[in-house]
Amino acid sequence: MYDAPRLLIADDEPGFLDTTAELLRGEGYSCYCAKDGDTAMRILESEPIDLVISDLNMPGNFSMEWIHSGRRRYQDVPVIVVTGFPTLETAIDGLRCSVSDYLLKPFEIGDLIQSIERTLSRQVVLETPIEEMEGFTAIVGETEMMKKVRRIAAQVAQSDASVLISGETGTGKELLARTIHHNTSRRDQAFNVIDCTAIPESLMESILFGHSQGSFTSATRDQIGLLALSEKGTTFFDEIGEMPLNLQAKLLRFLEEKTFLPLGKKSPVSVDTKIIAATNRNLEEFVEEGQFRKDLYYRLAVVPINIPPLRDRIEDIPLLTEHFLRGASGRLRVVGVTSQAMKLLKSYDWPGNIRELRNVLEHALTFCQFEKIDLSDLPPRIKQVPQERGIIAGRDSDGPTSRKNFLEVADQKYLEGLLKRHRGNVTSAAKEAGISRQSLHKIMSKYNFTG
Image 1 (tube, helix red, strand yellow):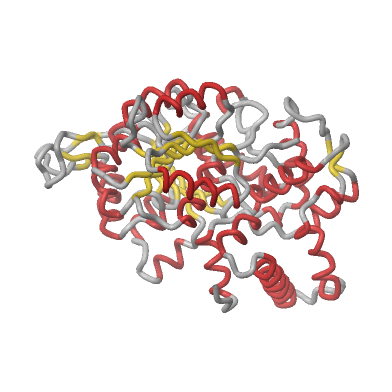
Image 2: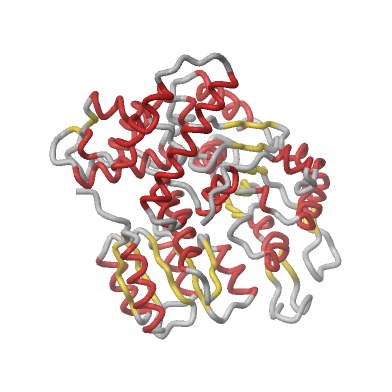
């Protein structure tokens, strides 16, 4: 049986702890609770935890100091920090030691769920770690589109040119970025992720560039920014389209001069780092709308790589399925998928792309009682798709216009059924679709759905 993600929630506020655990269990997560640091450590040592959600101000040995040491000991377990007493220094310290996200209390449960999903999606299921894989074999697919992606990635890994990876949510942009880094001469140095959706705008400049003591009210000590920590390594800007315009100007200056001036400092800092950025947005449209700087776009897109959506490379679904099942082979007896189940997987549109495929396979593994996943093991939404599209899919395509209309009708029917099943709950619907709440809201807005 395939287990639900296991979360450790560590907080000394009983009300927050119990309520959060109850809500997350309702979303399908398995939750372990700790009211102090010592209990949390015992749970980590005895249980296979997938993700930690921790307050910073806990009694016992559980604080930012623990996170620094704990990340070395439990480096495969991501951490989301939640706190009602934030300081800039703790936020920067957390990001420096690879804390995945930093949420300020109070927050909406939907924000926490989105953070959990985003964090867990980065724990990509691989047969072996990227560091042990040769070349670009971590990028699975034999369609011409994916061969082109691997070919360009292999070429850009041999240079210091900036890379802009574009693709829909769930296509594997960070996996590609990490694989490029692993194939560069910088592979033994840091790969630092800057998630532009996770860092509060008010903290982003200090987190990127650092600051000196006294440069503003809460700056109690000198702080090195993440760019400086990427010296000789790679800096990955995830969802670069969400970066505020004022920060875009400063990033552009760094890309042009390879130097920057930390807040409160008089002397510029020089940093040698490879820049890879990723986006699920159409940055060219953002440029036209004034939401993204044209000069920064061209600086980042020296080598553009577009990862196609899964619906445009359905021939790769058998390979991806085999890849994910092989990654779970140490725990499960399931070795494949029946021909009927595979036919159904290949008929689905996959709005959440590879991430959604993985979620569907995890669902199927939970219920599969035999050596191969069958139709009955797949989630209901997958099995509903052919019936919902039956009449439309039977028509011949007269060209691009009819294909576009077909896809729009199919999208609307899927969206209508998705929201109906979840009674308008966007967070729950987004989880089933394998996409973020933000992405689902965009799709709803496109088709004038309210929620």
